[in-house]
Image 1 (cartoon, rainbow, N blue to C red):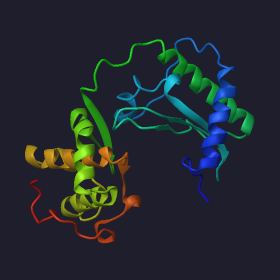
Image 2 (tube, rainbow, N blue to C red):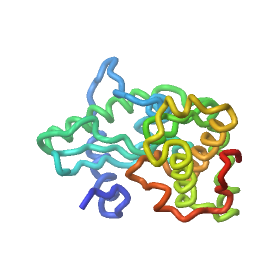
Image 3 (tube, rainbow, N blue to C red):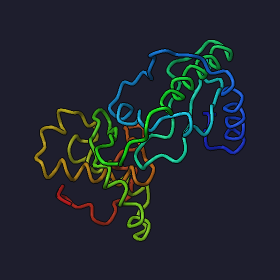
Image 4 (cartoon, rainbow, N blue to C red):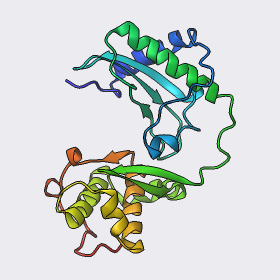
Length: 223
């Protein structure tokens, strides 16, 4: 069974471990978090020790993991930093978590971003789609009123993949080949997904055939 970060017992354990590890922080000098995606790069300003909710250290199929979860972040900012690698022992995983927390403690000394303006990034298959952060902020209340669910948001993305790539992964080349209106349609679909707590969408999350057609999904890409 895969590890469930949202499970109550795991959250309690992670919160207690966070408090314990806070007393073991080290001087990391000029070290920074290792980021490999635009999603992570655009989130660095928000990831700080004061926003950490818990530290999840657990044994997975390939070794020990040390994940960090966050609270009170703007819509679209990922609430979990996965383990930077697989550790061979629980002790090594704890040391890795302490290093991550030490870096986040340095971030706490920096001012919070003045606004939520700018872009968030949504990982849609093999492309990171830039999304206007203001859209993510304004969508939730409207979506809730309309009864729009994360299932429907995922279905919309699956439909785009079906139309554009015949159910194969969306790539940067495919996205960049679209005209501006079609790119904007995908950006809006990604913004809706982010507003509903969906951080990314891949082949493993479902094909179009696995989602019931939803109202508004027609043969045209325009929205």
